[in-house]
Image 1 (tube, rainbow, N blue to C red):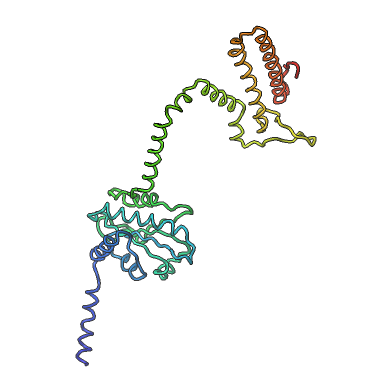
Image 2: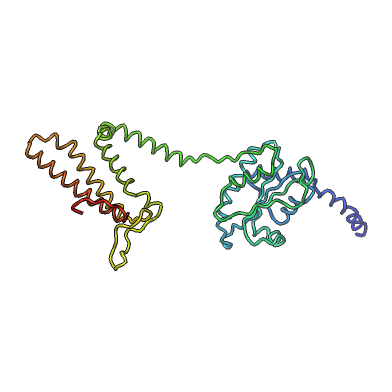
Length: 329
């Protein structure tokens, strides 16, 4: 028994040396696991320390996260698929391991000691351990850290952040898989639209080619924008205001003020004036009855006079110093 004990004691140093792996062996083992998983490898406190310890001739990108429902980390859950996508894209694009990078994930339940030693109060946190030896060795021991902001759950900014730390080297591109469901939806919608146009085209085309339709649309757009609609949208103006006497005012004084109701009033006045002018120019000359034509001329002239007079009165409210007016207003 004593001989066996002495023999065991003598072999312990040799066993320790055999268990101690070189940086290249650690990288090869981690990369093999990553290739087999097709995604970032899962770490524990022990494997995290073994993978990130110095010396390193490789880089390690580690996501410290908390995916369990007890921690209510929605950002962790939202970003995890993006992190897996980034790791998968990197492995596929770096088939020859030119960047010598390992992607890994350390969840809080498996890495409590690591979280505690780093005094982390939030998650997720991304750490990039650069090589300490070799051609691309970094000067410091501390890892680069990326702190997530609320609402940032996309792999693209992470990929750009990593690219900045691989300056001068070609890194794999971020490749998203084809969304076949979305593609099928768009294809179905396109085929439906083409079918609808092919079937309903002979009925819709004459309607779309109608000059009166486009003339009406043009007039409506002109009235809409000349009456101050965009001003209301930009300034978020109220619909009406008080007149200072307990009543309601629909017209705001001054050129820098306007009410929503005022826009509708002005648009209605412009519409009546436009319709009266078009009628006098196009409809009245085509009338065959001279007496009816004369009545229409007088009627539309009275409408234009009254509406234009009202328009001037509104303008006098906007600009109190305006000297002109027209009966009956």
